[in-house]
Amino acid sequence: MESLDDAGVYKLSDDLAVIQTIDFFTPIVDDPYDFGQIAVANALSDIYAMGGRALTAMNIVCFPAKSLDISVLKEILRGGIDKMREAEVTLIGGHSIEDAELKYGLSVTGTAHPKHLVTNSGARVGDKLILTKPLGTGIISTALKANAASKETIAKVTGYMASLNKKASELMQETGVHACTDVTGFGFLGHASQLARNSNAGIKVHSGSIPFFTEAPDFARQGLCPGGLHRNREFYGKLVEFSSQVPENMKDVLFDPQTSGGLLVALPPDRAQLLMEKLKEAGIAEAAIVGEILESPAGKIIVE
Ligand code: CO
Ligand code: CO
Ligand code: CO
Image (cartoon, rainbow, N blue to C red; front, side, top):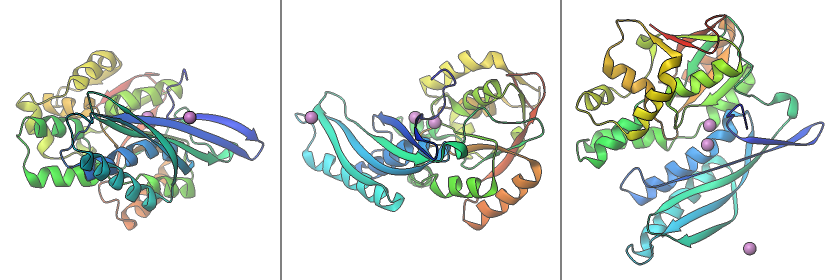
C-alpha cells in the first residue's frame, strides 16, 4: 500500500496472482446511463494499469430513494452492465444502501501472472512516457456543474471517460513495458511523481506534447477548477519544477484530478515508437509521448 499502486495483488501460486480494486464516487455527469458507464470504466482501469485481466465485479450503490426516482438507479446500473459486457467482465453481486448522496462504483477482481505484473515502480532511465487520454476532465466537470460547458464538450469528455483502458493495456503488455499507472484523482503530475518516486528516478515532461481538452485551459482561466486541483497543486507542487514558458492554466491542467483518465506508461524509446503505432492503429488517437525518465532529480518532475 505504501507505493500507492493502482490495485492490491495477492499471489495464489507461482503462475497466478489475484488483483483487487474498488472505486466509487458521486455523479460527474447529468445523464445516469453515462454515469454508470464512466463509473465502470474508471473502476476497471486500475486492473488494466497493473497489466491484469478484469474478470468479475460487484456493484456498490448508495441511493437517495426518498428524493430520487428508482428509474435513475436503473439507468445507472444499465450503463454499468453494458460497460461490463463490453469489457467481458461478469457482475456477480453487490450491495446497496440508502444514502443522502448518490454514489456508484465497483469492486473488481482480476488476475495476472505474478511475473507479468506492471507496477508504478519499474521505470528506468531513458524510458519514454506515453499518456493515452487527454487531460482536463476535472475542470470540465466543474464547468458542467456551473452550466458553463456546451453539450458538445460534455459529450466529447463523457466519451473519453467512458472509454475502457483495456485495449491500451493489452497493447502495452504485448509491446513490453517497464511501468504503468492510470491518471486519476492525483492528476497527471501527482501520478507521475508517484511513478518517479517509486522508480527512484526523475521525469521530464514536455508540456507542448500533453494531450488535453482544448476547453480546459479556458475554463481554468475563468476559475472553474475543482477543489482537488488545488489540493494536488499544494501536495505535489513542491516536487515539480516548471520552466517559465509553461502558462499558468496549463499547470492547472497538469494538476487537474481525472476521472477515468488514461494510462501513463514508461518503456524504452524503440518500444515507445512501436506502442504509439499500435495505439494509433487501435483508434487511441490522442495518445502521445509526453516525457522521459531521467536519472535526476530523483523523485522530481521538470516540466518544460
Ligand atoms: Co489507479
Ligand atoms: Co482506484
Ligand atoms: Co451478506
